[in-house]
Length: 200
Length: 329
Image 1: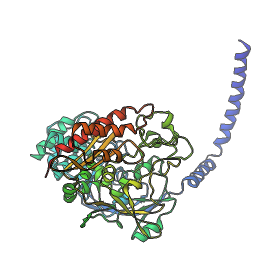
Image 2 (image 1 turned 90 degrees about the horizontal axis):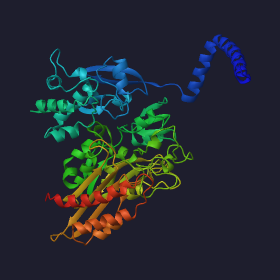
Image 3 (image 1 turned 180 degrees about the horizontal axis):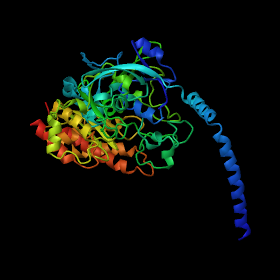
Image 4 (image 1 turned 90 degrees about the vertical axis):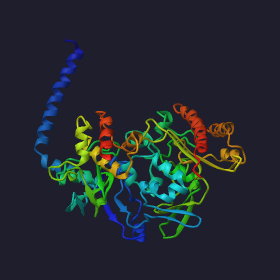
């Protein structure tokens, strides 16, 4: 064993002893450490603001207390249990979170829940009539409009709006007006076919 | 996101008084919410101005007034706009996605921040986001940077399509200042070049609210084109864009020309020398080529963005040619 290795071993032993006694000491103060952490966090970030808001989702009225930072997407999924609407990029680039607000398609990930006050929201859960699927849902099934299905709720909400807006004149027009919804499986041809079917 | 307070303004006065250095206005939120999620903007409070600003499009005898919170999609679909100011519709529909256009507002479009990757990554230096930290793009990847009007402090470009049409049409931005006084800013002076203070995108006085955008009546509804070149065919920001519009007499002599570009500078860029060149000349391929040459002669590309100069030359020529295809009279 060379002198250099020996030294490394020595430091290792010393370091182990120091580190383990420090860890033992820390184990006795978890509460104060946690309290200190929370204290620093609130001092730097400030306390969260909880504010009232209310909106209608799929015909049902909700009166809610929400963290001002919550997006409509987070409230739908976490607080109302409507997990059909998906969180993809969370930055308005993929369209997975598309819902209708007052009849127009929007991105729920860039809508603060407080901005939706007094509005009427429709999500994928609000399309079917009981057991009967919405024609667009049926058309997606029949035309292979999806593979993994993650982007599908957003695609269907966007597709329903695309037909309502009348942007189904050609394949090119459909693709242009569906460009805000990405599909990594590449089911675009099936999606376009489904929209053409419903538009007929 | 940092916790923040949320005020829904009940009047223009309350909106102006609630706004301070640590509070921001919010309308559509498509850019602001994203910037807050990324910790680029960290306001202590948001002032929701949707209820106190106009969402109407009002034509008058001399032009048309577009309310500050008119949604982009409503503006693009408006009949009066599509018939008499079609360049505005074309520019809007070339940008964003249908969902975003349903949320984003007219004033918000003017106030959106650059999409320079160095501005968006808080781990990297950026004088616009954090003054004094340096410009990462100047010596880093400047493939998306400005080719005209940049400074040593900032090489970012303004991302809007709508603003390119508005600057071409000589629009004006109507504002209410913090003290309640009303003012109008010519569109060409609204956005600024970065100079030594790139943290400021516009000349809008601190705390002021945009109340509307006014577009004077014009004859650019027959021969116009908005051409946008991007990295994919839809839903991407411009590498280079061109708004072109001509007024021609019966012999195809250009009586009035407008030429503006996006993706090339810190502000929507007007090519006034090229406009002056085209005026009283024949609308011909060779004159269009010369006009494009006048524009590209003024550019100063960087290490990675010389390709934009080539794109620009072609885009200007093509847009002017497209102006001749549109005969809707």
